[in-house]
Image (tube, rainbow, N blue to C red; front, top):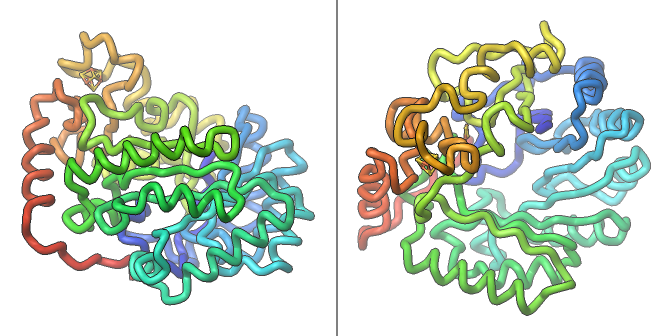
Length: 351
Ligand code: SF4
Ligand code: FES
């Protein structure tokens, strides 16, 4: 379960997948409601809770929520920018039973990292935060999102994660939802850049084998087949938004006509089993051709419903990044237009 505790965040990353209309602070679930939801999620069979945002450290009740996870036997992962993570706050979280920290890094060069984050001094504070996590004995994952502004340093980002003492690094190419879709023309890398980055990360995998786990999420605009988004719709994960809506994926609200239920009125188990949104694209019955008769339909589940909506205007369509999709030409046209010789547009920041 992804628990989006708040949309508030000191950073403004242009690849943020949060929606363009962010939930305001006044609409956030309170502590008692989150604690009830965590208990009901554990009863449903949830094993991992990703405490995310925005920046979850913006919530003063974070240690209480971590303690609830620990009491319920839920593995807790704090997904953070590191801004606001002092030694005292980390000690409180570790004492409450926090299991893991995932820290975002915007680039391996400080000046560029700060520009991408839209926050001066962010890079230095992230380095400090990594040091605190490692010193506290908590396992650290470094997450770096690749795009045109930093893709030439894919290998250097892996080296930085090793230097920071991370046990795992996730190198993920930007995926175009929310603010990232609004910034796509500024983020889109060229095919040659992607090939170089993939080769560099593979080379680092060999070089650092046994020292760090390197997970590399491929850029699907440059792939032949789409990703199995969310591992398949309503198959293994759920997102709870700051205001309590439960979504099958982070961008599901971009699909018109879906009815989302809230934890304010329903338990997660009821939402998981019976809500219209979770049942809309479960299994394979909803599929159109070519997915309907494709051998990969239970491998990638037709790709991403939100990407089909964004690019083809139809959430039931084959994900347009698939080479078998009748809409693939739209992806190729976007790649051509956005990675041509023209100058890179400015980022649109979240605030
Ligand atoms: Fe996947 Fe559909 Fe493409 Fe087949 S046609 S590879 S099921 S997206
Ligand atoms: Fe919604 Fe992929 S982000 S299905």
